[in-house]
Length: 446
Ligand code: ADP
Image (cartoon, rainbow, N blue to C red; front, side, top):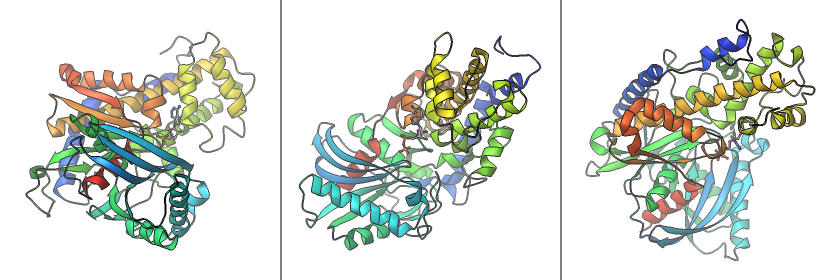
């Protein structure tokens, strides 16, 4: 417990509640491996373990120009990717923000918006929208696939609820919108962002067997041997297939360190009881957990002399990016933390003590997230039996920008795997999911 904390206050309790021991993490790895096995045996289990229909990984020598559309969460990108061989790519892209209106409006509007963006992008590159092209569609929501270019949305998450999309084939919806907009593009591959991240990284580094997203949401995909997927009823002559774990749905009360704050967040969320692991480690939620803790500390008078602000009482007003700024603040007076509190949360007249407490809360929640993420990675490499050498490609703002996140994950991996952890390389992947979708479109157009 830090020296600035009263021994009988709420903070020591927080410390206990948010700290995950090595033993707990180890237990989680074993349990998760078992859940992965169950998900591969049959549908209807906690981990969906969705076959991606991606059966070949790139050799690095693929060439050509391919289009991709990438809907991840907060952002949406249209990309033109040029594969140049030898693992080299060039990418041109247009990035758009998906407004809350689009996320929660009608599905038709959402897909029409995608078609418009694709049309504008082609025009901006001086390309003819009537020329026939194929496109890889990265759609990062749980989809039940029955072919490389067919898949029905099983469930929205990350704040999306657009109507008329659930249980529909999203490839059909996109093709329809494209036809309506007179754009001669056909979706040839439907790809989860984790799968895209894995495949695009494998184009450069063939040791890549895992793709992880730590952004708005979280998920992971990995390469599984066909013989370990009993529920697969398709072609058995395939050696391996990329599996989308949908690990964000991991939820084991006896193992996950779920606090009253996590429960409050879950109850108030748009998808209560779902995506519990995601709600403990991903960008959409980390700041929100901090906010719940701060409100509690304000109510006990341990923070800001008991003074609250309307901003702090507003759901999702504490962005996870603020945690990054606060954790990066090593100044004596925590002056940047002061700036975040004043300028972004309307909390004025904070004491250094207040700011230390806020920073410590961020640390507790940030460390917990990194350690739980590491347990997920350890479970996957253990399941694959690839403790000898494996690159894990990780994309998303949380892994990329949150200070110490990668190191905290590595520390936890060492606790979990001992010396073998040195064989597991965590690598930053950037915008890989779009490139991956284009690559998969390329592999499936050949
Ligand atoms: P995507 O929506 O495709 O996953 P990102 O990977 O950029 O996009 O993730 C966005 C999420 O990351 C948001 O929830 C946001 O709060 C969080 N985020 C953005 N910037 C930072 C940062 N500097 N540090 C930590 N989290 C961040």
